[in-house]
Image 1 (cartoon, rainbow, N blue to C red):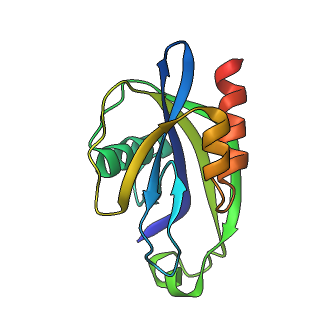
Image 2: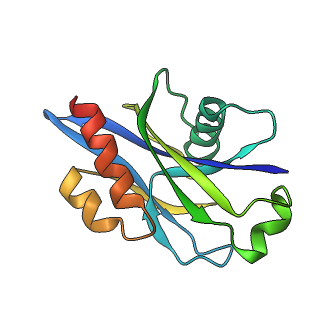
Length: 146
């Protein structure tokens, strides 16, 4: 059973003095279309948010990061009918917590994604068009600049 919490992590690197974000093109599945995103995933029973984030980074990219940074931003979205059975009975919303982490390694694609790329902030914002991803990346950018 999953907890009604999830994580959204934006991996980044510095290339020629400019921050670039690693985005993944998610394959259409679970009733969702294909879209660009950071790394996301649901919290499993007994995990902390940080454990969830580190597990998801490894599962979706094959990478291990040494430092995970919270953006201190989260948002909610409704649990879809087709997902309800995976969550406690009284759960209505999932709270997604936003993190970032530095890496200079090349990821390995999981079966959840069809491609990846490194993008500067402007390019990344143009690609992110699903859910709260733009807002989440904006908060990551602010937290990394402070």
